[in-house]
Length: 113
Image (cartoon, rainbow, N blue to C red; front, side, top):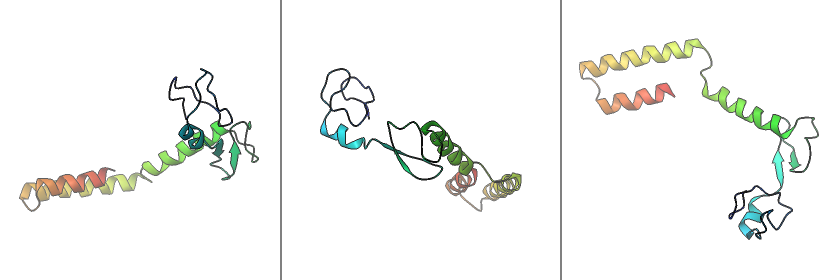
């Protein structure tokens, strides 16, 4: 967490920021001084150069981002095509008056996620 005065990020072991201001209690307790490896799940101190499994904090953070991006992307092209087909059918229902614009928008947003 950054210093509330200057914004610098401080290690949890320091009670005074580099700018000279004393860190508040909430700043001291919100920063536990550890990071969790996304590969093996172990907790590591901020001062350690890497995890016991051999991965660095930067590699762990990138792995976490990559996993999140994989979840957001469709699994394959068949999913995309089936969503497009469903969207076309919904549009036809809307044009026929079988569903309202609100219903169409709701289902469309679910399909495009």
